[in-house]
Image 1 (cartoon, rainbow, N blue to C red):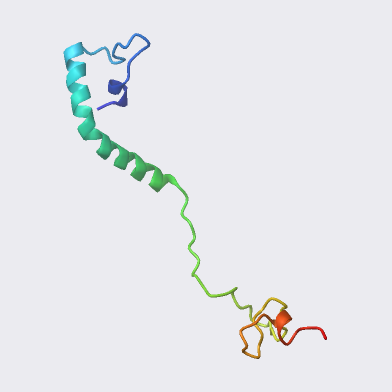
Image 2 (cartoon, rainbow, N blue to C red):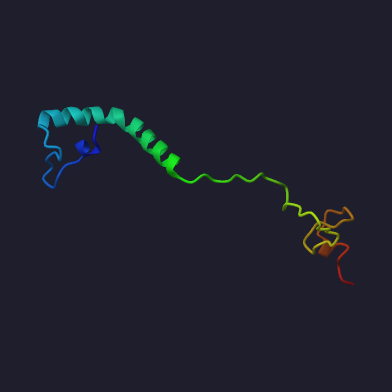
Length: 94
């Protein structure tokens, strides 16, 4: 069924030029076809969009080989295990 069957001109007349009784029949049947049409349109555009590259989820930034990270950042958890931030624990300036 063409989508134009559901449309009319500025006077409300059918754009397809079908008789009024045929237009009434088409309008009654249109409700049954709308879900299938929406699904088909979505599938068409889903196939057209570029594929997204999925990245694996990790707990932190990816480790770069050759990088040794022995320095503790101010906002990192304190290595002593207290659970406090380094700047509030062992990194506190005296």
